[in-house]
Image (cartoon, rainbow, N blue to C red; front, side, top):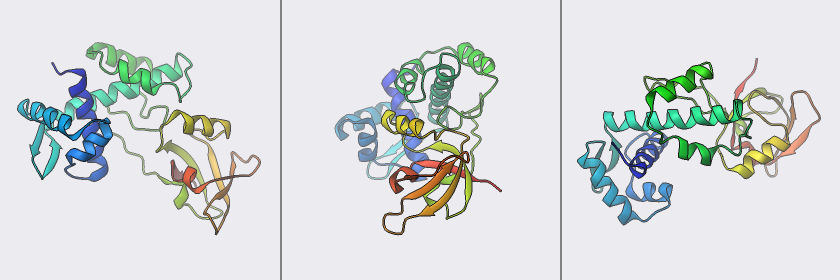
Length: 220
């Protein structure tokens, strides 16, 4: 049995490795976990002793097959709980992260499978992130940042990069949600802000920073 803290470290390392496409540093993990590098080093030694990570000083950290399986299980539970809270208990997509952080550590495989079945086996969570299946496989969508689309292109919103409540609340106010059709009417040369129309509605501007935190796929 792994502790809650150990599970959180494995999840953090998985996400960092996925972003870095290789080994990650102690400092990167410390920043992700909002803790001191010395504390990270102590935890890495414990995880290494359990054969959940491969850790060499100065060379970085990678998950073992066993460690990756645990990380994906935690991520699966987290995203299923988020989906359950939004779809069945009517929480807002900006409210569910912290709750799911607590619920993801419930150690019941049967409960997880029943929630998955109850939700009709969703592929993505409320933020558009893929949900690992029972075998740990992810169905990755080929999405791009909204900021990379060109004038007059039409796309569909598939996810978000920034999961903070304030950002999600901002998107909700502008009616930018998963599945929304977005047309790029204009791009400002000065600050790269975008004039967009959502679901053929009235056009409005969003900043380039906002566009960098929205994921979308092109529509034909």
